[in-house]
Length: 264
Image (cartoon, rainbow, N blue to C red; front, side):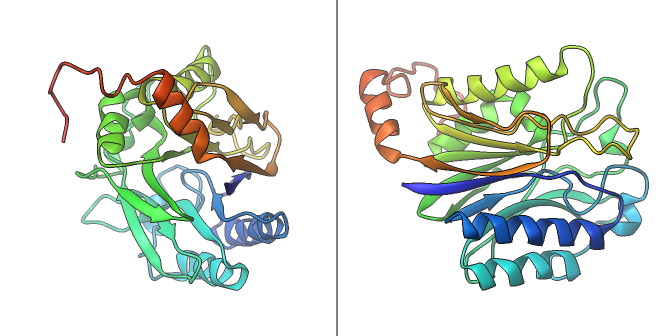
């Protein structure tokens, strides 16, 4: 069993305030026996033009602060940050081990140029899927809009992912919440793989519409094991690898594929 804390926190524009919130959430996760804590996309700061000024390298104060807490509590952490780039930033999911070391960094591949937004104006796309070993699992990293592209999670499962960690600052709006729930469950079902999806909680002081909550742990059969709803919360859930084995024995769809496209 692996205990995973879904850290559904609201995010402000101020990185120092967000770091304090994240460290408080890590303390709660550790007290509940979590092995891994997952935070939303853009935990460093809310989206907006200011991200180009507030972006930090991975050895900057925000990730360093998270790493200190990870080491102090002996648990692994995944969180969304912005890294400086040439002209544009990278939207990065950083994975930190229980000893405080950076184990991986995934730069978001699919940028949210939809529903009137233009993420690509500020963010440069990454180019490679990432699977990282944390808390006894091989974890495929997925960021927000990436969830709409099943070829990414299929690549991650082909690379041995036991779990997809999906971090998001999902936008509100007509049908958006329904899309989120459906897509998260679909990625679990089609890959017979656990999904831990963590979004920002709504911030009542923000007007940008990002953050609907609805963080979830979904099992390989698509059963929602935990759904946090819209309010801020830190909830620890259990991932049982025997459920993956039983599901794939009953439903060996990964073995039944006939199209070779995208397979490693």
